[in-house]
Image (cartoon, rainbow, N blue to C red; front, side):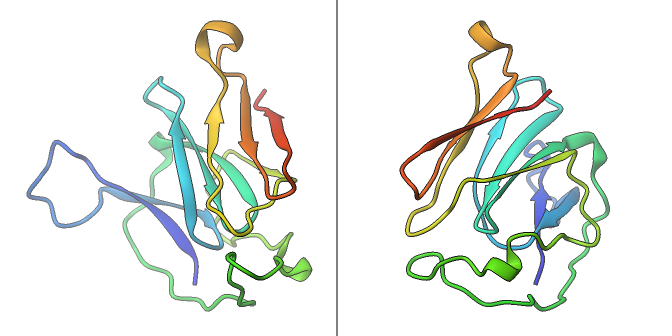
Length: 137
């Protein structure tokens, strides 16, 4: 199964459906962080990737029920090496960052501070006890 990010408009409380989706992850999302400009955000996922998104690139809210090519549990299994470089066939992300590992805990990701870096970097923890820093530019 693909794990689309569903986007809801909080101003429309009575709307029963998301306003759109962003496709690209292959497993459950563990964290999202907003760029602060109202356009971009990042998501960290159990598929061992961080993705950069543009909220203006939404597609219609549809579900894709294609089964995953692998099964694993982040709480106790090592991520399958054959799955590390799989790609979503309809990936809408602007960029994908790889290298960190999500294992046994739900890892977060953040944009670097606006006042010192202009949010140019993404930083995240990793199960190998390192902090990974990715350059967005």
